[in-house]
Image 1 (cartoon, protein in one colour):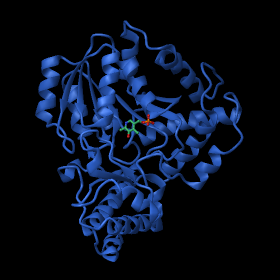
Image 2 (cartoon, rainbow, N blue to C red):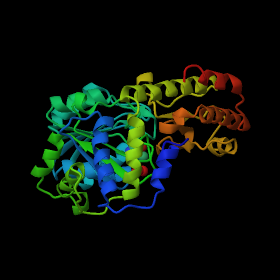
Image 3 (cartoon, rainbow, N blue to C red):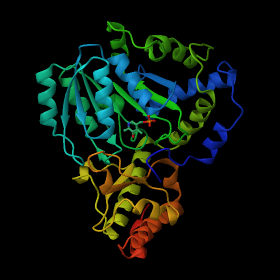
Image 4 (tube, rainbow, N blue to C red):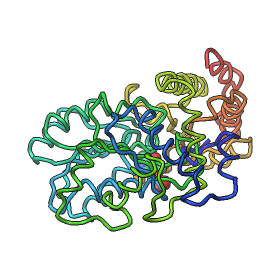
Length: 380
Ligand SMILES: *Cc1c(COP(=O)(O)O)cnc(C)c1O
């Protein structure tokens, strides 16, 4: 129950475990092409958007966006909501961008007027933000950020690594330019794929860069290969992670078996039910306001007298949760992920709530376990 790698479905696990295919095997080509098209549907992206599948982690997906959308000397505004925004800032600086950071205290997000002012003052060519910051459980207002970027003539680039396919994101409707993730979060695969969809406008930006991206990450190298897969033709630039692409086809089809609206709503319902359970245990969330609280994970403050020893105590009772990650407040909270297939496993969710309750009791914080489990139950 950590915020990634998450539990995966039996069908995805079986697909990933098949003998590896060649990158030009006809059935792999078929599934690769179908997966690219399915990404547009999961991202709710326009028909002319460019889906990208690379072997790598979420960090590589971030690097792909930075290297292809930002040039040396570009003014860039970065909305900083925590650990992964710090990482994005460092990447942007290494790319030679002139970065204006707009931040907030851990658990908070900067106000939109602040972001607008920074865009205006800097004349930014791009706005970068983390959709859900996995270190604090804070969700930014991605729709408004995309609108602000458009208004100021900047590309909008959202790190959706702890959000894509779980938190509402409407790439086309909101006019977003890049939305990236990794396979091991809400997409529900093993780690190993970096996924990104670019708007046509963003893909165009690569053309006008003066400083080339590293060859292995270059959209100009990858675009014809990805196009070939979509046209069901063999192509080669660098060998894709064929076993994971094979499994991705299965995972995306599982996601698209219901509407994206239904999937977003399911994550919201589950998060709300868990919040009721945490409240029954006397736990407080790190995000400062309800509208900032993510649906993909719970970041929960340790109650009085309890510390990081809680995480192993919870494990002893049968659930693996994560410790704090934000360097400034690391030892004051813990995190529980709730994305993807586990939402269909009511028993696992109840077991998690019980394990948290029992771990807390072991640490001297005794609360009514059955009340917490009962709070979880209605209308999951
Ligand atoms: C997990 C995560 C990343 C990094 O992904 P890796 O696969 O670990 O490189 C980046 N951004 C966010 C928001 C994340 O949750």
